[in-house]
Length: 294
Length: 234
Ligand SMILES: Nc1ncnc2c1ncn2[C@@H]1O[C@H](COP(=O)(O)OP(=O)(O)O)[C@@H](O)[C@H]1O
Ligand SMILES: [Mg+2]
Image 1 (cartoon, protein in one colour):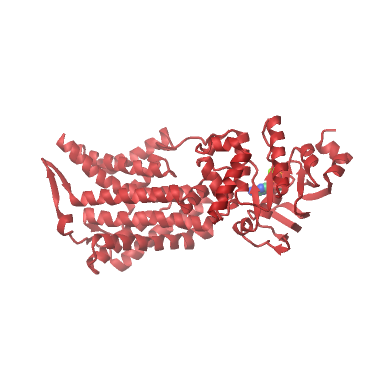
Image 2 (cartoon, chains in turn purple, red):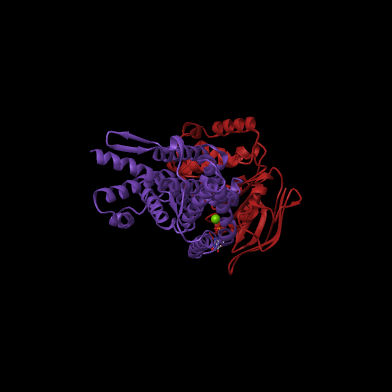
């Protein structure tokens, strides 16, 4: 039982990171039907920006988090404007291949400037370095920090998407671009805004993962990115609550497979889940297979 | 108030509009009729800025709007109820209506217009929290029209508003169109239901395969033998 609770706690921490990354995949897919392969590299860059802020500028966790999110917004929006926007009317496969190109570009440019070796985040100090022991269950302040920041960001995202004008524009564009344009919504700006939101969350996830696992490298985004993508598909690609639920589900699966089974299989199990979803319910947990129409 | 001159539109190799010209005077109901595929929808989409023309000119109150974005055209008073209604299905009725007022900042007037739309379409007031995708076809059409009115348009485009509706509802939609026109909004109406459209129109254009082949007052066209044969079932 105690081991079970311990795994739940670890699963929630890891799941938070997947959830943050999955949200970006799902929002971008929702608005331009693109699987943005470069998204996982935004997360990697976020981790590096956080590393730089903490190590070389000596900034605290929160300042580093905010700076990293801001930097990722700039990079994410720039990628959209430079690489994807000129292809707005091209076939989907063209954009998809471009996204793979952007992804490799970001990985190897980072490798060029930062070198391929692993870097370590500085250890946290003060209260953030503490651990809480409940009997034999062990919760680190890091884990609490990750979960709290994730919840705060997701609540903010929900407020933006549900209640602000830009958020409503985002939903309108993702439902029907032409109709949105007829409302006077600027579709291009709305797409940029979507990339901005997704990239900010990926940046935050990058810093949190740096804090959680301590080590970062230029290819660190690849596997977690794929898993976050599986999480988005699991929940129903294009659906914000789906990505959130999917992130925690995949985090939990991974931790449980590693904890009770064999940690060699944890990636395989995640991808097996992808295959099963695609066969059983391609629209995902919260997705509807057909759109309601009267 | 609206004048289009010699508009050409292509879809790749398809020449969809072949030099269309028409005018709409302020306060009028002008209807554009013609068979499926004639180019009526493309005409409206070109005027509202969803489709770029390859040549020609669009003037709104004397200003050239040919190269303006759809957004700019909405700002200048054009509102378009697209073919097939195109409400946002996963958003509530109220959210759909609010999006109609997307470019407006005058909160008090928006609230007043919302009330006006609810008075015109009481069913929308009853369903304001409901998702638009769950409304019936007639209700969705009312929502699409209400949403278009929320921008306070000078000129309203309606693309086949009676499509797929029961006869009783069709009559109701036409009454609503007359009402909106009486309240001062100019109307450009695309219809397959030619007889009803001609009855309420001040002026009418007939399209065939990308060209305007006939125009006149609604009255005149109703009497025309060609029209009777082709569109009025006798
Ligand atoms: N998106 C499109 N791509 C290619 N051809 C199109 C497109 N939309 C319309 N067309 C063509 O333009 C012509 C006019 O279509 P449309 O304006 O929809 O006619 P209508 O509204 O009168 O039925 C048709 O031949 C149609 O095939
Ligand atoms: Mg049409």
